[in-house]
Structure formats: structure tokens, C-alpha cells
Length: 247
Length: 283
Image (tube, rainbow over all chains, first blue to last red; front, side, top):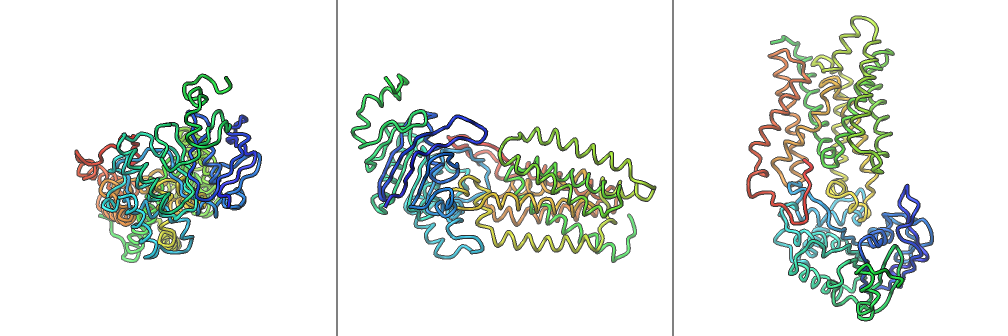
């Protein structure tokens, strides 16, 4: 089964005329661990947000879990765990870590339904999986960068998603925390056979279980293949050192 | 101190309690969602609407609601698409609403009406009628029901709207529900607190509660409690000093907020450690 199937997809932001991503053809099978790499401004986040329907595409067709994205976007999102690129958080924000993890299940539980004991069990399990169970009652604003990232990951996992989208989960983290998150992702993929798509602009932090890499530049997929082949390609060096991709 | 018949005193106290409850309950969402500028405009639109109602001899509650919802209807979608800076919202619509309100007040015919006009400007203990009380009571129950039923969705939206949306929550629905209930709360509290100050009753108690708690549930409980206490003390202050009730309530709630800032455990050194990835102060 194809978890993601994009056919000639193009996304233009409202009020703008130039597409951020265009001619995107991408198929991701169930259980794949895929990395999307590219320089800043390549359209990586736009691609992720087009997949989960937050940004509507303007041309082409897109399917997630064999459902057309614009028609079933709310249903699709309940099956997608999304870890957003680092965002600013008020250190005095009035939220406990456990509540943030539970908030990931809000859509899945559904409207007019209360949080059940089973939902809390899933939350504790997700927090345990990322090693944050002792931080359950810690205010979210008082966590370190790495701890916060783990809570966001636990939040996405608490959704019990079929697809996990991770937008730059390693940015702004120190080396050892990056390694911890990397191990964690490998473990999640190994244990749950989940389809994972990770976005990164840092080539040195692509988890070992990730087998496929696509390279995005100026809104277009310019390479798609096995991780080893892509990462050793000279084109990669050109892109990341701004020598131009068409040379 | 003013002598007031017992029935009127009871109505006024109940009005103050309910206005404190609805405004400071909505304040939790308004503050967290950074809707202060919209809410501010809505409260002044309600004020202009009430003045318009007096001018054309229509129930000022109805005209206040129409104006308030009108502003929410225009500003909500505009602000949601981030096409409008909050400073522009305040600078433009706030001043327009105040200007309109004064124009309408100027055209209110007769001496008696000018007294009514002044009451909507700074509020009055005696202006809370039986109907207002019933509406406030109904709104209080609806709010309790709404929050209890949709607590998990509201918490998700309050934390991060895009993340909530990505998890399958209909964030637009809750955004507009917050605007809608804020409009109701402002319009129904207008006669008690006054058009110029009603928004302080939304912001101050919540901002006070934010100084003490990290748990959203506790903020949801204590913000209305602080709102009610502010209203009751303000009411008492108004009785003994003959200050306008709106001003008294706002002075009390502002004093509580200032005191909270001083003693806030969240602001003590060593607390609220800055995260490496940067932070923004919302409260």
C-alpha cells in the first residue's frame, strides 16, 4: 500500500504567484523510512504541510493512505503524527508535559468524546517510549530543547499514527541530544514498523534505519534513491555548497 | 455609602459575579490565543453599538451584540490569515469605534438618555436588569458546558494551533467559538462595567492567574475566581466610595495583577529557565 502518493503536485502560498514546490511526484510505501534533504528554502516544510493538508496544493493530485488529501484532510491528519519545526514557546506557558502529549490525541478521540483511561495509557506508553515519563508533570516551558523535542515526538506517537512526519527534529539540539533523538527514531521504526518521513538540512543526522533519501532544491525533487548513493553523490556537495544544481 | 434596596443589591451582586465569571473565563482563551487586539476592538465596538442603540431607541444590548459580532466577523478571518498586524487593528478600528461611539452619544436625545449614555461609558450598579442577569446566567452555563465538552480540543488549540490542526482538530471552529463567546461576554457585561473598561475584566484576572500556575486546568479554574473576586471587591469599593463600578472593578483587578507580578513564583530567579531554542513572552 502507498502511504503517500503525490502526482505532479504544486503548492503556491495564498496571495503569491510563484509555486514553492512544483512537479512533485512522490510515492512512499508502508513501513518506509524516508529523508527529505535540501538547503534552506528548498520547500521541505511546504512539502510536509502539503502532505498533511495544512497547505492546500494548487495543481496535481495527492493521496495519503489512499485517500485524496483535500477531500479527507481531517481524517488523514488523525493518522499522521506531525512534529513541527522548532517553534518559540513561552517559558511561563501554562501546560504540563503530559497534557501536551495528550493533546496529540485530541483529533483521534473525536469531538463530543471525553478522554478515557485507555487514552491516558497510550499517553504514558508514548512518554515511556521517549524516556520522558518522569517529566510528565513538568511545565513545558521549563524543559530543555532536547526534552521538549522528545515531548513533541511523544505527542505525535500518542496519536498512534500510520505516518510520522518530522520537520527538522534535530535543529537547535546539541550533539548528544541529536544522537538520542536519532536512536529513538530508529527504535520507533524498528518496533512499530511505522512509515516515517524526516526533513533535514543536516546531512550528518540522517537516522541509520532511513534507507531512502530524496533531495529537494528550489521546490523540485532533483534526486530520489538509496541513502548511500545519494549522500555520496557530487551533486549533493554542489547543492549544499551553493554551486548550483544544474552544473 | 449608598443605601440600596435588598433586591437590587442582590441583582447587582449576582450580575457582578456572573460578569466576572464570563469575562475572565473567556480571558483565558483570549490571552493565550493572542486575541487581545481583536477582543479590544470587539469591546469598543460593543460600546459603540450600545451608544447606537440608545440613539435609535433600540435595546442597547442587542445593538452592542450586533456591533461586536460585526467586528469579529470582519476581523476574525482577516486576522486568521495574518494579513493584518495587531497594531493596525488597534490603531484603526479601535479609534473608529470610539469615534463612532462619541458621535452616537452626541445624538442621543433627551436628558434621561444622556444618563443612560454615561452608564454605558463607565458602567453602573443599577443598570443590570433581570433580563441581563438571565442572559449572563445562561451564558455562564453554556460556557461551562462548552469548556467541559471540548476541553481536550481547546487545550490543543491553546498550546499550538497548527499542531492541533495537524492532529485533526477543527481549529477554525474553536477560534470562531472563542470570538463568538467573547462578543457575548463583552456585550452582556457592558452595562455593569462600562464600554471603556470591560476588556480589562477579560485580560486582568487571566493575566493574574497566569502568574501562579503552569497547569492550564488551574488557570481555567482560578481566572474566573479572580474575576469574580475583582468584581465583588470592585462592587463594594464602588458602594463605599461612589466611584463608577467599572473603574472600581478595573482598579481592583489591576491591583491584583500588579501584586501577582510581584509575588509570582513563576518569575522568581531560577524559574522559567530559558530554552536554548528561544522563547517568547505571551503573558
